Length: 358
Image 1 (spheres, rainbow, N blue to C red):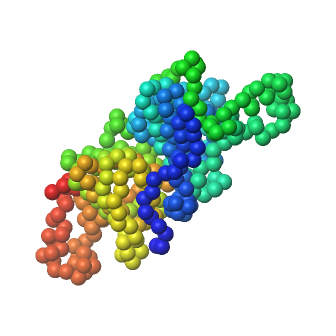
Image 2: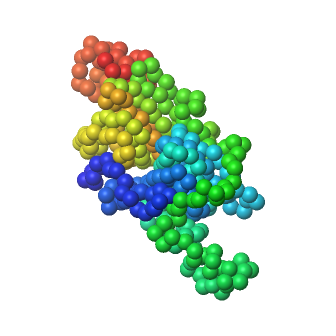
Image 3: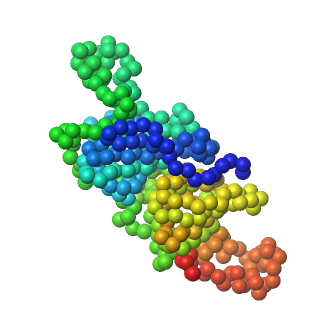
């Protein structure tokens, strides 16, 4: 595979006093276009407000730091969901949902977005449609059309549609006196899973732990067609070499820490060997085998997989495919002795997918 898999950081797209929006582009990270994946981050300062918008792509949102409020409006719903969000929260945002974000707190709020752009306008890039602001939908209609749609005078339409900061692109800093709707914990039901509080799907002492988001614990991932997980790898631990066996792409954002990554592809060729650290994104192509080893401080990453209920095969550990293959087949495949085959089979009989540091 000739395509560049090098991990990359995002670049600033727009913003202002209230915060900023950064994104990864297919030009910098070609696998985004190949996999039809979009990736971006929203960063809101105190009183920062990202005005209502909708996207051409379904997304999974993950709160990287801080806390705040997310407003979600489902198509044809009579009222919006006003959701309190905090670090570790994951939300699946399907097509047609209108969302807004607000940070009422003293510390910054940062949200990661990963999603499927295969049905979008530009493969590998989100196209967001803002309802207000300098690029708001109604700025493109003539005053007559907006006046007729809203049953308002053209004078009032001008005050609503054209009063905005030309550089804000929908991210502004609200005045302290500006009232916002109160969030409701009940509105989190069925829409949010906190990856730090959810039951662990894998927990290996000294190795690491995993929380998997799927259609069972977060029903809306079925609507977005994506699965996701949060992985915390302990210092010096290794994640077993493995691959997606249902043709899914693995899109990985390093939340914190650092480590080494190797990816092996067709004909046993190593297509990536690099060090990754917090803030970087990389994509593993379909069927390629990936493994990671954390640095001493450990490594944490959030991933989406381009299927809502992914299936993986591992090539080391107790659940390795090697453990299921007959001893005679292993002997013949490795062209080795029965003694070495038995030694090989006797190792990693209790380790799952994470191997603690020696």
